[in-house]
Image (cartoon, rainbow over all chains, first blue to last red; front, side):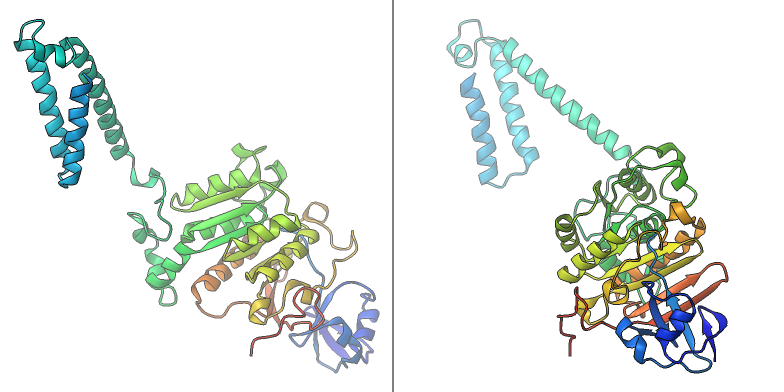
Length: 65
Length: 350
């Protein structure tokens, strides 16, 4: 399916958010995720199914100031 | 001589009892002094009245001369003080009241319907703690000081370095080597002498964070490391003080307001753990666009003024991402984490 990741079009297989993160190379990374502008906490990622046209935001925490 | 001094004191005390103005009391004492001098000049040597009032006019003249010197010095000092230009006068000692000229200074705020005189007074009475006098803290502090926030504290343990000046606009070339907190205080006072600026030159530990945070109405976190971010978040959550946290690297900045006491998420709800060392590089390692902290730090000041005045809709429960490279901002809705070790036990208000 086609989804938007951080503003860019990407093709992922899914079906869950956890799977997509693995595909995109974020498996195990400590990132925050938001699907269609709504925050998805880590424990909920495995149960969150993706669908075509979803907007996914992957947020790496920044430390700079 | 003692007799006359006691008489002078009695005159002063009597005047106080009768509520006589100070000037009248000084006049009475002056008359007494002139009378004593007259006695010494008019009466012959050895006269009992002369003997009872000190014996010679010389001592009285010396005493009078000393008093005259003190008065002249006070008068001179008052004249010098009166000549100090209004912008150079020290800030009003009384907290929460506007000094002469301050209303004019904030006129553009006061005409804003959402701030007005009431909001400006709230800013004047407010105290804000800024953690980190770096890229984010620089514009945030300058704008908060300019906006008339009454008390601004700043914590940092670094000195100003040449590599800071590409983006940390509160510091100047001439202040390289100076502790950042003192340079920041200089910068704020240069913009607005009516602000009370408090420098804390130290690295925050848990104990200091709890003490400091509890003494402020609002905290702005623009520090440069995860350890301090988690520490400040925990201290704010425990003290019930709202926290505006921002972070950035390279071309992207993130900003949110964390107020778990009001039922919205805290920093640790969103970022439960820091990335492994090396995965989230610091500005020194990864680089940062100079104006990026200018944008995001100014946004912190905007959100701070909204929090303090109650204007508009703040960033509680929302995280704003500014992507400078593509000129985009995105906002995502945040949720509390019920098992958050910092704020999870706290029941949300009904």
